[in-house]
Image 1 (cartoon, helix red, strand yellow):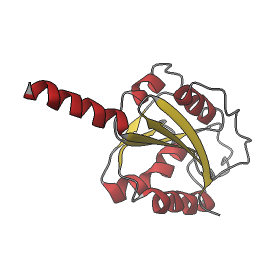
Image 2 (tube, rainbow, N blue to C red):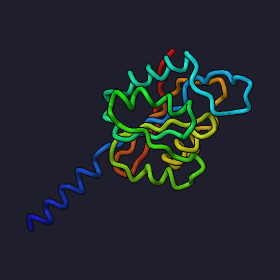
Image 3 (cartoon, rainbow, N blue to C red):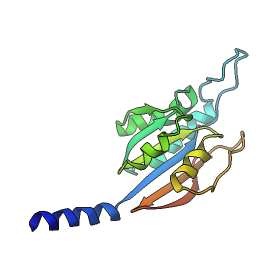
Length: 161
């Protein structure tokens, strides 16, 4: 009987817990140096924005950090990773199972993507078509998807200048 009551109490607590998914586009990237590469690092402005992201999220109990393998996404996540001691896990934005993997997590998560992938992640988590691709010149949006029980909600904030 005690086992049944304990199991029921644990299930109730799990259904009441909240998981926050913080989804951002990488910070400003440096101009291409003429080489034919799309893998450019952050600009000085981007470095400042990455620091601002770290400042905004350092107290949010983030347990997992995901970024695509590009220098600009890794650089955006790097400061927070160092502050928290949480390693950056690389993900492939074309992997359709990635969002499902995120949904199984029970702890807060940061995901750093691109102007054309942030919407896919947010829409995949919420199950609704809430966002479209971000403009190429738009930086500093912080999309917070909250999962409480089986329900998802979206909140949008800004970080950096």
